[in-house]
Length: 356
Image (tube, rainbow, N blue to C red; front, side, top):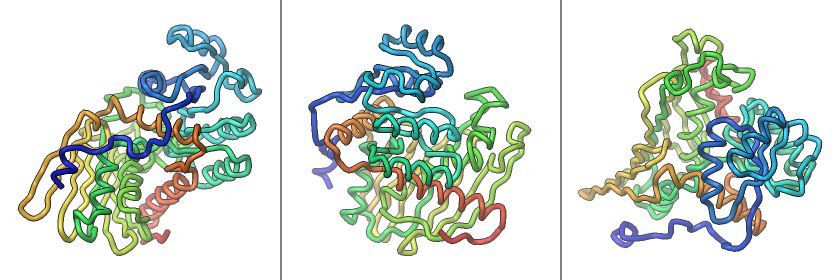
């Protein structure tokens, strides 16, 4: 244990340091421009060569502002403009638009890194998987926690038996969405664009997917309750959501989420011998609290902060594109998350236990 605390390989996944993946970025909102773009610029294996937006004028203007070589419209992207300028596509649009852009990227033979959740419904996510597999393009769903060093160390500790047999998981993810984006008509509150709802799709998926990754176990049954109270959330059912899931091997998981609450993120895994508590967990600056018997430790490294999370994600994807290596999480992994999210909504609507 002391050896692990003293040092470890931040990039245990890396297989190459050679080559560059050229990216086209689709959907030039604040996340793409303020987070994804600098992450790629600071990465070892990627560069941004193309911006894709609603109009050529907007794309060219933003490309000039950020010293990106090409700016094209969505229509031009679908038609195959500038395909010689990029190798991979990052899809950062609202959920319900993902499929169309992945279909065009596949037509152009380009690798795809698609934001989570991968689409608005299970059926559309299934279509995305079919498209990627039939055209044999690399498809990764953008789960940045899976390359976060703290999360990877948590997985390593579980596999080494630090917690003993996993017994329970508690996950929470909440944020004050209307303070962050004071727009009642934003797409995350529009089920036609977001999908099944807002809090589970946008926030709860972090607890669900990170737990699946760390424990290597999937849910088998779901019970849940959800409600909406503020007028801005009248079109979506889950301003507040809570779910009880049974995972494989009898592990119980409670997950709570809200888009209208004090910002808080946590993922706590308790076993027969110890506990791993990531707190905060999902919004950057991940800190790990460890307990086993009389031993307690808090582990915080600069490698665990938000400035690096997206860079790690893009370099992982670039590494896999350059080497034709195994992608985690691929489209089928993202599809399973969509099925879990749908089950949580179905359980809340019916009041019954839903099997997966």
